[in-house]
Image (spheres, one colour):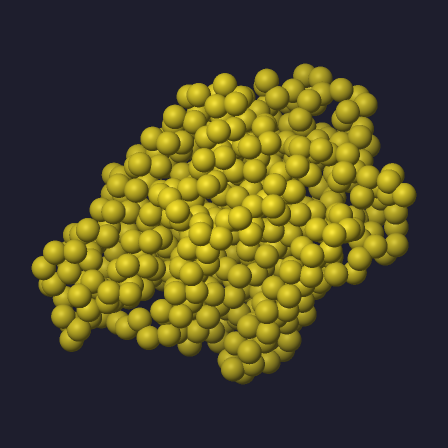
Length: 494
């Protein structure tokens, strides 16, 4: 057992509780937040090294052996997402220092931020379905407060929709867990894999699998994404960025985990249905992205397109497809946070999210303009930036699985993503300068460092892909060989 496995959950919880006690000390909140996230980054790197050299790391809570206790398991897939989460959370927190406002800071923004990170990390690490539900709820309860923090009219309206959708999906999650427990007598994911393989994935088991897919599709904004565009447009940029980077990704992670570890026996039903969900999601998301002339709407619809593309790789159920999904998921976490922070900085300068009211901003803010340009190319998958390699592998995987239609949809919607973001770039940054420095509504002071940091990481993911790719391949291979996870959690290899 490795006690490091639980630290990504414990560290943000303890830091958040300290902040709650010292509510008025904002300096302490900022310092403790940065310190906690740096500690998470260090723990994630240590876990990655240990997994690379010694295999999957596990922890059995309370010393109770699986499947009787709560298991935590850190494989390469989970740890790559932990590492990505730590990096994105750190830059979003630094961005919040100069943008979130004193009132929100004094009303528990920083502890809520860390509790949300604790829920995200717990979801990545848990090996038990009920504990997964608990981690989801920790994450969601923190997000309920964050989305409404500030109390503006639009926030309160959209928070009601957001909460209602998530309460319904959480209720369906419990129903699915109850049915699965009735069929198998266990909720440990490694043990579930063994039991489902023994019982066979018959019609009833496949129905339960599709119920889980419905639950996590709602949380990942696949197809049933009607709640996301307005909800993610309502809060300030730092909160919207962490939502876009992480919340839907937890749903995607869970779909990938469950349909490679537990429900992989009937891919002609489950995975083909996942492929259809991915295609529909990408098409509708791309249509939404090109249809609007509002920065917030365009960015939120691009979150939906990215979710569909990641799931397309899973639908192929090939080594290349899963490799592409893992790599693209890491890329999407980074670049979605980046594009929302860029969007927030632009809106702060021009005072509106309507991009057809201002032009020529690049003359006064060249760094901001060119970083937005780089981010747009990365999201569209233009080489040699980070989105390119993930899209190549996903497309190759779909072709190998003979899902040519799915690969074609992915490529077509990538062009629509590029068009939607170039539309923002050309309208706001190009042309005659209509907004002088003196007419600007705000400032980018303090915002450029986190934006620049995420831009550099996005470029590195593309140009330095050969450094990351071995770990991504290991993650994909582990996902496609469930016995490795089962042996590590249940102790069958010892």
